[in-house]
Length: 244
Image 1 (cartoon, rainbow, N blue to C red):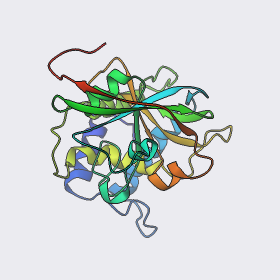
Image 2 (cartoon, rainbow, N blue to C red):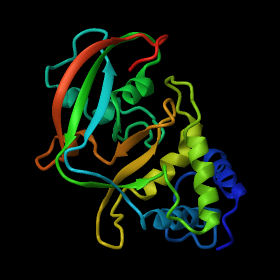
Image 3 (cartoon, rainbow, N blue to C red):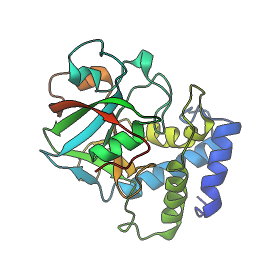
């Protein structure tokens, strides 16, 4: 494999946005761009697996939703958990139709990540019931090979750029969606700890972190789910003003 350079992230983005974004695991492919870029992503993820981030048992994570009226039910854990697949929109780490659980480490970050305008919001606080292990895209100090660090810094720089929210399928999301999909299934570190998500810098509150957990609604609501709704409340958020 050639050295990963700064241009590799840009080349990867161009390739999967505008040339080919599927068949990365098709066995008949030999020396192809698909397999090369797959190897870039997998080797980078392997480096990240050497130093996982732990969401410790008892940690509180935050999620909010606009609340123009009443929710369909008063089951606030379900209402503010991962969306049903038919309502799963394209997001930075997941394409439309694939449900994942996006959370923030603070109430402020959850509101800033969600709000497009001043509105009423329902806010949920979820308490983590067991340790959860994530790939950490906020800290690369444990990675000694600079070629991987360059690739990751370029990726995170793109990942945290503001993108207009609308109903279009944003091609800007595609590279990070592919990165996420390649590590969604059966990835563990050398100690056998299963990777259940990603930690990444918030695009709207860069000093804090956001999370994507590999939980759709069915898995989130199943017995043994590590998330418990500990608190629900509502508030009006004025987007023109800072919040505490």
